[in-house]
Length: 178
Image (cartoon, rainbow, N blue to C red):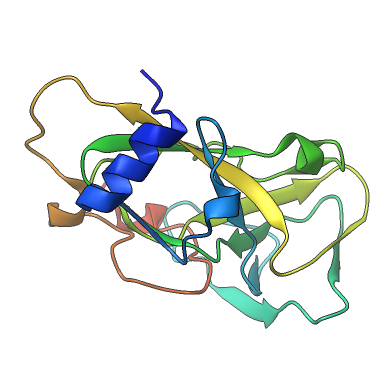
């Protein structure tokens, strides 16, 4: 079941959901709008290897915006730091962003209960488009969980994305054993 605005506010008041900074105007009927942070990252190498650490170059979006180009994966980050201790967060793009031809994630729209961080976005586009720090970029939807949770993300010893950051984080696939 998707949490309503009332249930999201109750979860924020109880500490089960944390959104920092929180803006009441960003709370929708059953979602919360998140905004693009000021940092982007691009991989240093064009050819990526899933078994190796693929390093990134970080850049700051200038006040006049930054034009993203088709054929390049840009890692973005949300302005908002979030925590979810009893609901499953899903991040979806806003329809206004989609209508500009921007995808905000390739596959990673679902978070885990216990995820405590900013969200790294996997930005791509179908034609050049200028983006700006602070623009609404997506919306978080929260689903209730049925049953007890034994394995919170922030308590897992092998969790790869627990270090709090304001910058996008590159793939940590190389830390897996395969």
